[in-house]
Length: 484
Image (tube, rainbow, N blue to C red; front, side, top):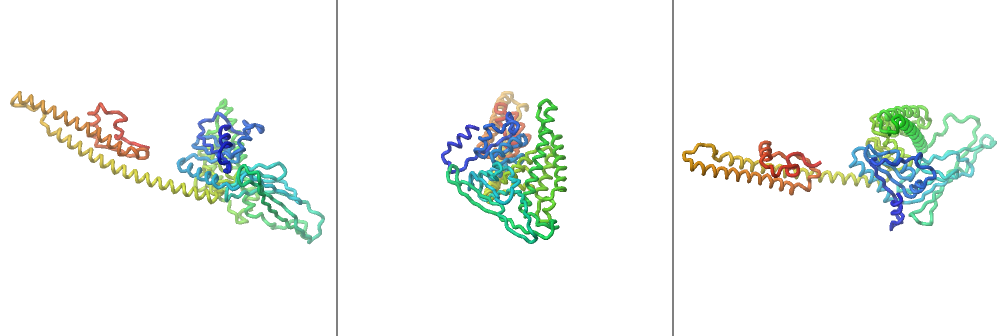
């Protein structure tokens, strides 16, 4: 870690924001990342917050909790890639690199204040609040990104008569940022929201109060779902610890039974949430479609029931906490988090990556077609040569035929033996040269071509039997499947 930070600190171009990309397959799990192993005063926390660390978990053996923790504490994002690695990892890197290339502000901080209202709570997701001053540390901002926060406040009315109306100053927000790392000067943008007050004739609230604005309602539901998923993961961690204690310290996190229990827990809590939460029930009346979140949660339940791990939950949390696109590990039709926060630059780079993959696949298909055609031509030539040598060998007079003259018969046997030997040597030479030609002709495409070469069972078996000096795995690779 210290060496990586030193490299970034000493980089030549400090006008660009620095980032760290961490890729893990989970095979090295000596150190456990988490609040229980890293104390609040541990220097590693400060080091991690120096540069955003974007983590990528490959395969099913990686530790999603550790990678999510590293990404979250450093203001990075965590992507879970457990299947279709070749395509998913390219897409994940395309999203990540597009963000790196479109940084428009660093050291972003949002300050929220009010002179007439009491701010009781601010929901900021994964972003840090600076005490009670209403400051939210956002860090790096990409072009096209939007960050939504929910501010709760209260107000004590005076002794106003019926019909009284006024306008309160409401809430004021200011954003400070730097356009590039290392700059001393900062820019500030401000905005304010007024709050109209009107006193009615009745002491009771109206039957149909003005509902929350749909965008506000949507973000309120998102933050509540984050809290629900975090609670499920905490209970899963407790189960994991209890299972580890039961088997004398052996890790039990990948136990399908534990995941099935977690799936049942998530399903029950999600059902209770939809039945009891007023924001969720208010959404249809405000023409707000939250079906994407519902599908995501149900898909998480299915993945846990299949014993495929909690990586999809951690990556979904990472995306919604930081309001930034990532690869969630959920099936394509349910990857709301991946597309929800994508910027135009991210979409463009992902499309370019898919075009490159399609072009590469087309080139490989064309190359494979050429390889197969060439292989058929070579095999056809091999069979013809074998037929020729076998016919010549068959047409030679047999040495055991009776001869009228013993001396002439002796000479005939000598000539026949010589011809048999020459034919066998010629056949061996052809076999060896075919192997050389195939290796030279197709070696460049062996890595992605799969085909079976068969020169005829009789000829191939006969040739292998007659070539003891060149037999072996490296000498006759074309007798079976070659390539990946």
